[in-house]
Length: 106
Image (spheres, rainbow, N blue to C red):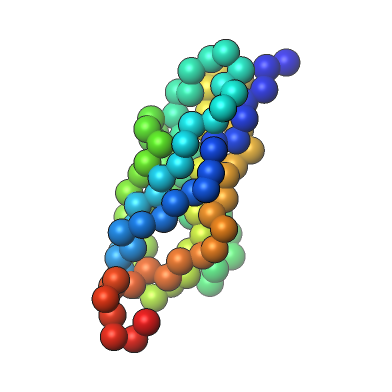
């Protein structure tokens, strides 16, 4: 059985705004001999308490997550996918809060 490794971390989170942020990661070291077809991006709203799929059509190792709610706390994870299936997800180390980057209330 071919093994598809987890995407390489860390899962970077930048350009945090009230309604969006940008995620970056590296492709898995081992793709089992088949190219990565796409990445699956998920968000976890700590108030709602469940993982929600953001996209399963991402083909490059970065993604702008939109549709965040200002003031909410989020975690993110990314899985790689190819003909062998879906990898174990790479998860961010700490949650972020969707907010203005230069808010006086940080």
